[in-house]
Structures are given as C-alpha cells and as structure tokens.
Amino acid sequence: MQPFNTGMLNELSNLLGERGLLVEPDDMAPYEADLIGVHQGQALAVARPQSTDEVAAVVRLAAEHAVVLVPQGGNTGFCGGGVPDGTGDQIILSLDRMSQIREIDPVSSTMTVEAGCPLVRVREEAEAVSLDFPVFHGGISSQIGGNLATNAGGNNVLRHGMTRNLVLGLEVVLADGQIWNGLRKLPKSNVGYDLKQLFIGSEGTLGVITAAVLRLTPLARARATTIAAIPDPAAAVELLGLVRREIGELATAFELIPRSGLDLHLQRTEAAEPFMEQYGWQVLIELESASTLFDLDAALETVLATAMETGLVTDAVLARSEAQRSGLWSYREGIALAQVETPGNLKNDTAVPISVIPDFIEQATAVVGSIAPGAVPIPFGHIGDGNIHFNINPPPGSDPVAFVASWPDLTSAIEEVAVGLGGSFSAEHGVGTEKLAAAERYLSPIERELMAKLKTAIDPADILNRGKVIPAPR
Ligand SMILES: Cc1cc2nc3c(=O)[nH]c(=O)nc-3n(C[C@H](O)[C@H](O)[C@H](O)COP(=O)(O)OP(=O)(O)OC[C@H]3O[C@@H](n4cnc5c(N)ncnc54)[C@H](O)[C@@H]3O)c2cc1C
Image 1 (cartoon, helix red, strand yellow):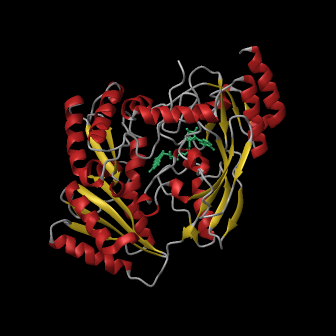
Image 2 (cartoon, rainbow, N blue to C red):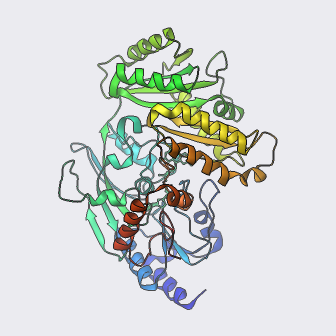
Image 3 (cartoon, rainbow, N blue to C red):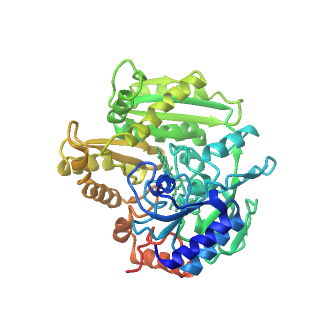
C-alpha cells in the first residue's frame, strides 16, 4: 500500500469509526463483486458513511488524496458500474448505512428518503399510507440511490415512465465535497436547467446521491392480470395496440414470456404450466386503477374476447385473487431469477421501437444461430417499452465457460441489430464498464463530446467512478 493511502485510511477511520470503514479482505469481498458475479474488482477500502456530512467529508478526503471513489448501492446493477477496477487503489463508497426515510408527506404525495434505503422498503412505506412508488423490478435488493443513479426501468414503465419521471428533488454530494440540497417537493419549478436530471442516470460519475424526494402515485386498489398465449411476437405487438386503444392508460404492464424462459423457470420450481397446453409465446398483461369504481376484469375479458376472435390470443388465464396474481407474475419474474442462477447465461438490454419488435426478435435469433449454433435465446420482458431482454443460454449440455467466450460477439451482434432498427444499445441497465465500447461505437461524436464536457465541468479531477460511462483518460 502506498504511504499516501495509509494516511488517508487513518483519516477515514477517524471519521467513520470501525463499522464505517472496512479494510479486511473478507469484509470487503461482498462489496467487490456484483450480485450476479460477472464483475469483480479489488478495493483499497469500503467507506460506509452514515450521514450526508460524512459522505461529503469522505469525498473531500478522496479529492485531497486523488483517490477514486466508486459509489455503490445494492450492487444489483448489471453493467459493472458499482464495482471497483482491479488495481486495489479505489475506495467503494457504500450508501448502505444511509437508509432513513426522512419524511412522508401524504398530502403532497412525496417521500423524502436517503439513498441507501432498499427499493422494497420505499414501496412498503408508501403503501402504508395508501400511496405507491411504482418503480418495480426484479433487482429486489437494490437501493433507491442505485435506482436513481441508473434511472432504473422495470415492469411499470409503460404507465409511469422510468425512475427519472418519479423524482422531484435530490440531495447530492459533488466531486469537491460540496452538498447540493435540491430536496424540493415541487411538481412545478421552471428555474433554468433541471439539475437533478443530470445526476439521475449518471451512474455515480457526476455526484453521490445522498437523498431524494420521490413522487408517489395513488395506490392501486383494483387490478386485472392475465397471462395470454399468443401465436407469435407480431401478435403481441398488435395485442398491445388493442389493449391501449380499448383500455388506455390503465395498462400498467405488458411483458413477453417465451417458451424457453418459461421452461427455465418451471425446471427450477414446482410451478405448473399456466395452460393445459404448452404454447410458444405468452404475454402477461396487468391493468391497475386506484379506483374501485371500474370493472377492470370485465374490461380485460372484453378485450381478450375480441383478441381471441381475431386469432391474436389463443388461450388466457385471468387472476381471480391476489394469490393467483402473484402466481402469474412469478412466471415473469421467475425467468429473470432463473437466469441469474444459470451458468453462462448472457444478459442483453436493448430497446427498439415497438413496431419493429418482431423484426428484432427474428433478426437477433438468426445472428445468435450463426455465432453460437445451439444456443438458446430467451427474448423476454418489457414489450410495452420496446425493451426485450434478448438473453441467451449456452447450448444444452455444453461447457458454460466455453460459451462465455462468445459473449462479446453475441452482445455486439444483438446491439447492432437493435441500433440498426432505430433502437438503443442500453434500454434500462446503463453503461457502466460493460457497455463502454458500445457507447463509443453508437453514440454520435457530438453526444460523446457533450458527455465528456459535462464530466470535466462537474468532476474535473475524475474522482467519481472513473472509467464508468465515459472511458478513463489514457
Ligand atoms: C434479478 C434482477 C432483475 C433486474 N431487473 C431490472 C429491471 O427490470 N429494470 C432495471 O432497470 N434494472 C433491473 N435490474 C438491475 C438493477 O437492479 C438496477 O440497475 C438497479 O437500479 C441498481 O440499483 P443498486 O442499488 O443495486 O445499484 P448498484 O448496482 O450498487 O450501482 C449501480 C450504479 O449506480 C451507482 N450508484 C449506486 N448508488 C449511488 C448513489 N447513491 N449515488 C450515485 N451513484 C450511485 C453505482 O456507482 C453504479 O454505477 C435487475 C437486477 C437483478 C439482479
């Protein structure tokens, strides 16, 4: 260890105490690798401040000693953004001890919460006052700061937009240790540049988010949920159009479930097939309303009947109780979880305009077949947002380690298909280190230059999450 680091660690230890600074390899290990075990680094230390002032003091020390900080939330991110590099010189700044809910204001429908609060707790506390924070996805141990820093998507984007649509104010520690208190509860405030939006989605490269004012929505008191079997992805897109035309904004989730994903989920659970017969493609549709005055089941049944008459839907199961609803959702969420546990599973996160989803699935399936014959595509997820996760399992019976060697080619080919169809190489997971090369390839020179200028203006010494989102200077 270099002497300047020893000095800094002593200062950090005085500041944060024993629980607030981890330096032993065993203690640091859980913070050095992400949850899915794909990205692994080595840290000099893990700092665990308990207050915004402590975060600011840590950032000031890091700036003084020119040590890079890696902000970290629940470590569920898929792009390596919260993991240090392999040098052993960077310090992980974990927000896990800053998890207070500072205020819930039911009249303004806001919650002011610290960054380290788990997303599940935010949702539970909102529900306790008959409100909802509708960011909802499978990264169940993620923290609200991580959701903001990655601008997380999830299953309710169709209705509520991404995380950035649900934030009214932020508190951020800047790269020089200053604290920006932008914790306003205002849905309307046109005062020039919307600074909070700069930090949302910046993946810890522009500031450390320490707290946020979240916009809460009325809690759904009525829901209608179905799994419908469809002939192919083109029918899914047509059905989405029908549902939105006939039922409008009450459609909250519209998720694609392929046979390959369903099989994976069924193999690792005792769940039964959703239908008497096996079908190749299905969609999970959910309607929600805060009002109990509308008959959502009847609306959904009417649309499904129309869809069956025209051959868009072959079979459908409606949830008649909350238990049945969570059973139907487990078919969708189980796919994501099963893949986390599947050795060699490759995750992709692209988006295309909804109208070309069938072309995307067809073209991506063809390129996978040519690069890795026998590999199993699992195109599933947020069809209502054009965000199909074109994930891939190794060929059955093959060595997953050997399959990993084909990941870069497969990922590039799928990104190429998505971008070629007018899409994005990253829909909701971000860039981190994982998608740096894609950002270089697909963002225009003007976009890259603007991003680099912003980074230099806000973090001139490149203290915050160096080498994430924007390549580190060579
Ligand atoms: C099974 C599973 C399903 C998932 N499904 C979805 C999904 O449907 N939609 C989706 O969008 N994501 C999904 N994810 C990915 C992940 O949950 C999200 O990206 C989440 O927002 C990351 O939050 P986190 O707290 O775990 O952040 P981390 O992984 O710890 O960090 C992610 C990034 O945010 C930065 N960061 C974290 N906290 C802060 C902070 N306080 N200030 C500044 N920067 C910070 C980190 O430096 C890093 O760059 C899924 C993950 C899993 C494991």
